[in-house]
Length: 246
Image (cartoon, rainbow, N blue to C red; front, side, top):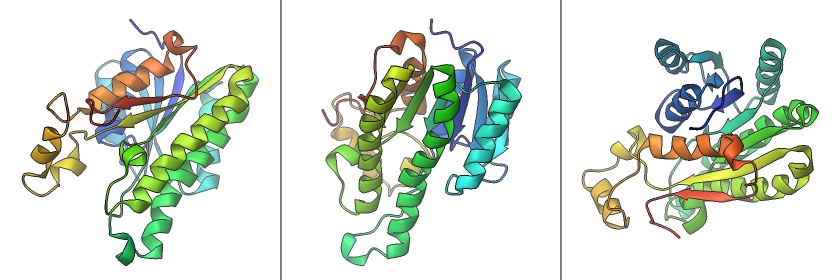
């Protein structure tokens, strides 16, 4: 069994769906989870973890605010003495055909999905380098690998995360820090349930395993990459897509 006892993990976008599942799974393996989201949205996730006997605290964080990101990381290090795991999960979608896409929708998606991951990652690097240990795990998407009509901004942001991780993995490997990506396919979340009736069933037909994934499917992959068992894995993209894209 994976053992993350005593490890301190910062999870962004931890209020629901994949982020909440990641926070819960890391805590179940013993990690102290700093669950971050806008407003008070992460409080329910943290409370659920504590109710189950885990250790968690909720923090308010707008990931597009670099000063706020740095303050949250500094606060976590000051309180716990270290930070071992960063999960860049926060993300948004502003879907539209390229011809009609507003520049503001492009900028918002890039800022939240890609630039914010840069800010969070840069903020944890100094304490991780000092520790000579760390795990940085970023949530991309199958759309960043195969593309999808109407999502050029989202696909660009998610593909960018992959390039960023591969480059950073080479920069920090000598410091004992691994950098990896988990790339989910169609996952059963509030976002996919909001699709027009029948659409999710159509997607399922394109998946060799014949079903949408669950947030726990993604969380389990993240938990593995955060563990000592994955110490020799870095710069990789772990696809959690049921065979939808290989």
